Image (cartoon, rainbow, N blue to C red; front, side, top):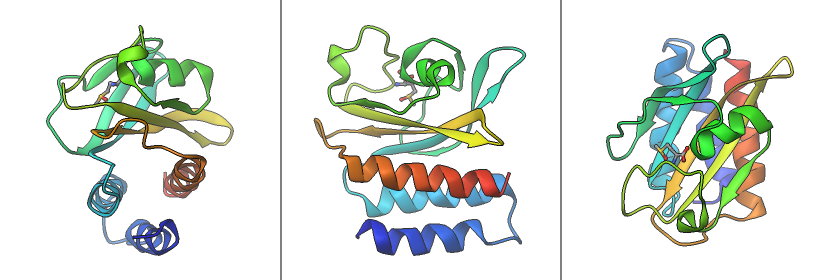
Length: 151
Ligand code: SME
């Protein structure tokens, strides 16, 4: 499915005001994991700025032990501090990386901003090496902007 068609589905999932924000974000995880062949684990982490930790809110994919990640640790923890997208074409080339599954080859993490503050992120793992393009980044930035609106 093209990113354009997927945008319509994401919009409709997020506009479902009868569901909680968590449920709506979960629906976005389901859509992304189902529709993009190389998105194999899709989850949302949110920051606790006092504790400087990220907390897994909802996800689709293999179960993970990493439900709480300290700022600075792994790809996710680095994005909590850098406020920038982090595209990892080859996870093996990263020193500061938290492995969740041996099948994962690549990862992309895009921060979510609310009122200018980095409040969380979308994290996607891929079992395909080097699959992410600028198109993925632009699409996922858009997803993060839409998610921020319902929070
Ligand atoms: N690989 C991530 C940890 C989260 S899992 O991908 C679900 C990282 O290095 O931060």
